[in-house]
Length: 280
Ligand code: AMP
Image 1 (cartoon, rainbow, N blue to C red):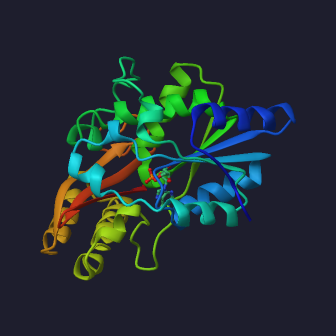
Image 2 (cartoon, rainbow, N blue to C red):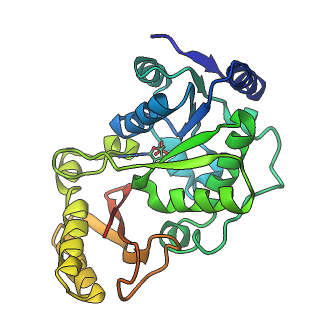
């Protein structure tokens, strides 16, 4: 099935506005492309719940803290268009950076608190870039619902908070993480792993699951965390950036489980940084 491609803000806005006038509810799935079954789950959920589905594909320069990571980020627009078409997407919005940022921007969205730990601590400016570009996408497409994966749970929490505090008239819907059969969370970055790194990568999920089991079994949070770190430490190709048990809303570390919590990890496999998390 062919899908409409918009590369300009005006074009994307017009496409969504027509659908809105025709009485269709608007669903938006923001992505950076190099689409895989994880993105597919978001698109399929949007397709099931909305009359019109837009997928944005934009490798947003302002959320990268490293230029080499931005430049090396996989790009695959032709395959992505086909992927979206096969899942009944109505429109793909794939602007160039110059379309989104014709001049150096001066206005930003900053979500305090929930942005500050985990990836926020290790990637300065990352969530400001994410929140700002998602705010722009919300203003361009004006969706009724927007879909985010729990694979990036901190990102979902940041966007939920932004939408709530700034009164965006959009419902944020979360979709469960899609994994390979060995537990590795699907990620566009996985295609940068060498064969050996790919073989080593599922240690992250195993460590998350082990920590969850230990805590569910009544073990202490810090003890579970240390055991998980040891487990990853035994994999010579993996280097941990953080491994934390956090409050699911605030994303701040907890020492005791009193409410909804998540275990979250970031680690480097060679030159590739992977993140993952699970609910406790
Ligand atoms: P990205 O293209 O990596 O920026 O991701 C776009 C959206 O897809 C985000 O909301 C991600 O959380 C979501 N996503 C990425 N990987 C997965 C996955 N394995 N399972 C579920 N959602 C995912």
